Image (cartoon, one colour):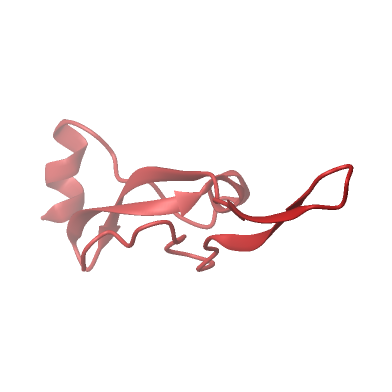
Length: 76
């Protein structure tokens, strides 16, 4: 599964759209992007990189894959 652009793997939070509104009430389109971080996790015994929003990371909704020698024990 490829890493999805600008979408959280866990909660599927994505880009939000809206308007910039000036003091003169002029409106122009703008976007809000989620704060995504790349995390290595174990999926079906394989380590994959996914994008996860910081809310899901802080809430512990995913378990990061261990690094180094511990990786061989998890995958095997």
